[in-house]
Image 1 (spheres, one colour):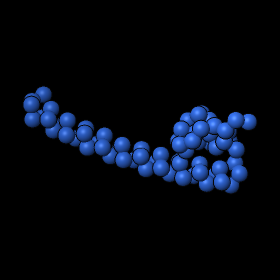
Image 2: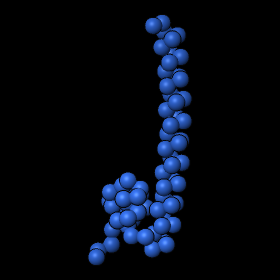
Image 3: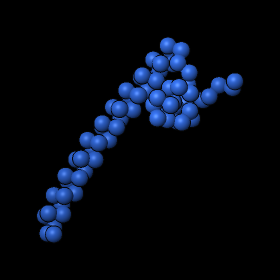
Length: 70
């Protein structure tokens, strides 16, 4: 591999990573919005976490809050 090929590969990889990061941020924002709406609609945190493929703690982290004592 030449220096130019390596540099071109680095630039392309960096662009792909930047796009992937953007898609991940957007998906996380969407997940947060739907989780917030589900919570407001009365869905339990356990069910929201299951549906979202998260642990309950992961869900609380996503929503920026701490679990409330039962």
